[in-house]
Length: 280
Image (cartoon, rainbow, N blue to C red; front, side, top):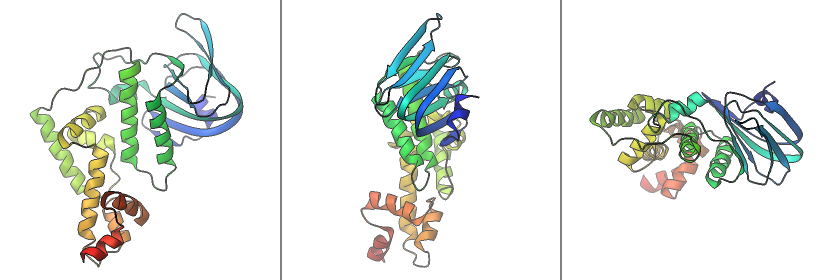
């Protein structure tokens, strides 16, 4: 039985990415290996132990402290165990997912991450905790979660890859045309559940290159741009009293009236109903 099967149903799964968060007592994941790159983050003071076999067949063992993590390369033999109650986050990344996401950043075709055991990395911890918070929210913002995953992968590559990274080249005419297509696509699809992989596909870029080029041109991330456009459309629709706020929320791509209200208040300082009352 794989470690993923032992962990149970993932909190989130997409192509090449799995996320698990939980609390569990007295666990032993015996010697195992798998194709995925594994990130283990311990969030409390439980005595979590990890053992692994190095590339030179040497046995190593460490204890993870609170807020420490491991980055376990693909196919590395390792085991994990603890007796206390441990609060944890497990992330599994397929090497092919890493390759696809970072296509324009990597020189060469082979990507591997160097093993890291019992280290602290505040950015990885912050991203993982934000993912957990996003997944536990009332409504799931897929584009925001996709963007967090992209930031995580680029950070892993920049910090722990065994290969040299290059910054994507400046926009060419074809790339500019691709971004124009994305802007039109977003405008036509605001009522839909937009995903990063689809936006990158429309632009004919990898996800990482698309995020980089989009922010360079627009001055904001794809996720923030989409939110801004949804709020802009909501303002226009709120001028029509024949439309309920619930219907406006759905037309603008929000999952509920409360979902719209949260973002609308953040961007305007007032609720949709207050905005309607003020402007009509």
